[in-house]
Amino acid sequence: MTTTTEATTVYGRPEFENVDIGDTMRDGHPDITDGDLLIVDLVRKRAEALGRALTVMDVGSGSGVVSELLARGLPGHRVIANEVEPHLIAQARARMAAVPNGEVFDRPFQEWSEPLDVVISWGSHHHLPNTYLDHVRSLLGEEGVLIIGDEFCPEYCDEADTAKVAAADVIHLADGLVLTTREEVAAYEADGTVPQWSRDLEDKRRRALWHWYKFVIDYAMDKDNWTVVLAELQITLDDLTTTFHEEHKLSPVIVQRDLELNGFRCLTANVIGNRPVDLQSFYLWEFAPTPRD
Ligand SMILES: C[S@@+](CC[C@H](N)C(=O)[O-])C[C@H]1O[C@@H](n2cnc3c(N)ncnc32)[C@H](O)[C@@H]1O
Image (cartoon, rainbow, N blue to C red):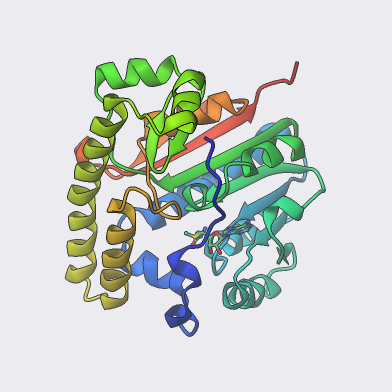
């Protein structure tokens, strides 16, 4: 997907400096813990299949919850938590210091240059600049995989939308509106023209998100977790604001097409949360780089 902005997240806000937001989210938000366990399982299976020690990087690790689980669950494999926010780096360091095979890389992921066997992008994809996918491809060897899981948007593409997305030659966000061809991008850049389909799709996205966030906030409220309630209210406002680039959850179908267009093929697909599709937002996929020409 093509956009122009850099990432910031609610995780980096000053009010969370003295809490472990990774732990807090897992207490007050559905599906994250189930995703953690699935990630460890997928990496373990990968290690068994390859039969050698792996180097695993958790990009945008937050306070390092999954990095620690991986390092503890996979002794003998190198696990690197990667984070850029100072207080999260400190929390991740404290977690990883207790595990001999754990370490922290405290610079933007784009500055890492050693080969990797597994890149984990858990909750980070929709915050990272899209160029990170190119960087992942450049670091993964032939046997490497990208495990990408996120809170996307519950699927809002109908059959016709899905067919249009499948035929897309580009996924481009024009101030939050999805364009699917180079001609549409050229027209937008020339005079701001956006197809009606893109506007209608944005309306569907916002309605699907509103339904989802009400569920998430009620879940946190039931757990008396006011930190998550307040964080999610802010995230809701950010996400429903079409032009707010830093929080823009998209349809899983669109994200998958974007990954394909960026040189990845899907190996396994999982959805978390045994609920109707309008209340399923967490998807976890394994993608392998397609060979370069
Ligand atoms: C929503 S959080 C991810 C949560 C975390 N993976 C977990 O399991 O709790 C996204 C994180 O990505 C980090 N981040 C943003 N840009 C980054 C970059 N270029 N390199 C590494 N981390 C980045 C943010 O600081 C933020 O903590």
